[in-house]
Length: 79
Image (cartoon, rainbow, N blue to C red; front, side):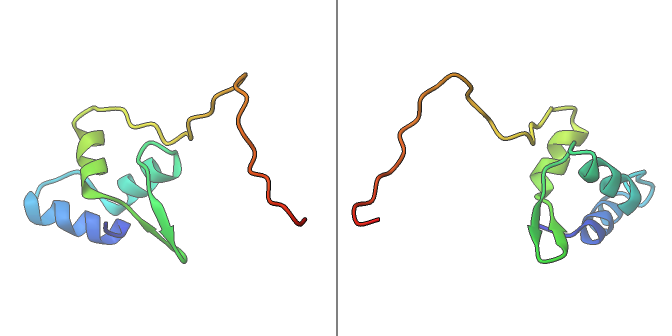
């Protein structure tokens, strides 16, 4: 897990002529195309998620919801 800036540096170290910049990554993350986790005010991104995106794999950032399904609700006695 790395920050956006650290990811940009990582890809720059792999390939000095890369077009992957912090701005590019930030835009993809804010559009929901690359998943992230927040830690305070920082966005942490898995390198594997960026690699998958760059390889053309689609990653769903939407939570899986099941409509029309009855789900159990936990009951606690004494309330």
